[in-house]
Amino acid sequence: MIKVSNYSKDGNIVKFEVSGIEVRMLNAFRRTIISGVPVMAIDRIIYYTNSSILNDELLGHRIGLIPLTTDLKTYVPQSKCPCKGEGCARCVCKLTLDVTGPKTVYSGDFVSKDENVKPVYDKMPLVKILDEQNVKLEADAVLGCGSEHVKWQGGLASYEISDKDTFNLTVESYGPLPVEELIKKAFEVVEEKIKVLKDEVA
Image (tube, rainbow, N blue to C red; front, top):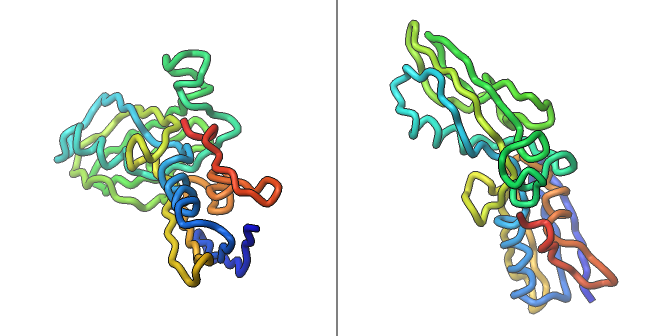
């Protein structure tokens, strides 16, 4: 019988002990938490102006790695959306950026059309722009999984063996989802058996 004990939380980090389970199953949980839980990330960018020192591709790479808060009740993966990936309000959240220097452009300068999808951290620096330099763009945030790209990785999970069938599991959320929800979306306990929620994977 699987038992969970010694549960503790410190900010976005949860630690607990799992016993009565095989290593291969615990590793499946770890991999699902890392790469199988859908979260929002910026996937497409339309540039109107970019006179900063960074070219569009490099700036876009930095923007794509900004962790965004995620609302799984409102949005669905584009592969499952009735619009078939065309980009509707059900599968895409629009964010805009319009800044003029001199200043440092931060993740918090983005304006989202949905207050439930926005940068987790406001002070992530993207680029410094000089006097009269301007960055103006529109970005599409969509649901994806870490198995597609690291920008959709909602957190990390690791374990250490403390006994023959007892493990210390640590889960850390990057912020797109609260750490408890990240765990809940990865697996559940049904009749004393743990089930990996494969249907949650985009």
